[in-house]
Image (cartoon, rainbow over all chains, first blue to last red; front, side, top):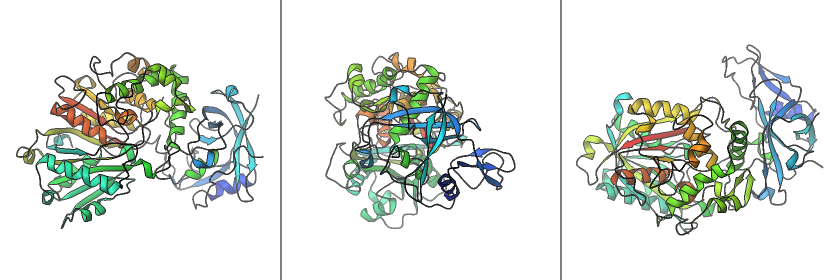
Length: 139
Length: 381
């Protein structure tokens, strides 16, 4: 059973589809500039560092650490009325400082979560089209 | 823009009652605030030839113009973005006048909280287009971004929930002098803050704004024109918009020195020729308490990481604090008109008409929302 279900899912978008296609194959493709090597997330057409249009989808390690976290304790949206409390984390991937994405930790109680905690990606299929990258702790 | 200082003025202000549920449409509320502002300025409807709204808006400038029966008005725009964009609306008003396309521009914001999601609100008015990277994980409202930034600030600098609470308590104290504040007559102690319901740990209910029904408006004209109008002009010493590479719909990293609000501070202080110690009163966008604390740091009123002790010291509380903050109660306790209430309150301070009047207030700052593209004002009487 995925960590959270019933929430709005990603819609098809020409700039983002390769990210979600990668997740479906249990890979975490992050856009990387082919000229200066800078990773960027969310995906976007141009490198904000060197203005190059050349980019590749780099399969990153999926390892990182908890940059910040919260426990949503009050249903702040109809979609989560029966989901609270749940954790929401911002993960910094090990490939680059500041390369962060929003996700959840699937194997932690709230009191176990802390900043700096090492984690790695796990893939949860929520529909035949969409697999979400979530995280679990590593030692 | 350096030469813009004091060339333009706020010549009229207007607002509706602020309430939890008015039963009125945004257009209805907007028109009341706009008509009040025009009347306050001593102008007639036919004098208004420009309209500035704030995106996202349910009642856009064309709708306003139609409702007012305006003919042949040639300047209208909506600024980005929400609570960040509101003070910058006045920059666009000035641009329209400077370009010769308008002489008297009305700026407005109108909200009807009761028509939005009420669980308890805090939902995005519009969805950022990257929502596919956040919503499936349960990041569904701005309070979650604020919680992630707040946690990081606490981790880095030892900031505490009680320090966030000091901001909420100060705003509530000020609201309790303002009969138009939604939280008027409902005092709050730091203990009440600490006991309020957890929403998104570490943020509690009293760290969050009060969603409101209401509208506010002002009229901008040249200083020259302002001389012949009804009110004592409030001069615009500086106004700017600011955006930076590390934000816009991601989580604000509170440790980065260069960000939207620090860029805003650079521009406002450089245009006005002032330094932070010149300010008499502050109106800082308060959707969530941690963003106020971070703005105080980024604007240069204290060093990075010192926001907690700064707000806890009483500095921001009227009447004894050196730098009273959100003297009408702000979004946290007066009601959230996305910061247009902050502009109205700054003008009232400089007219000597606030319900928490700072003695001899001469210079006020208005700062828009933190963690998104923002904007601000420095005003003087």
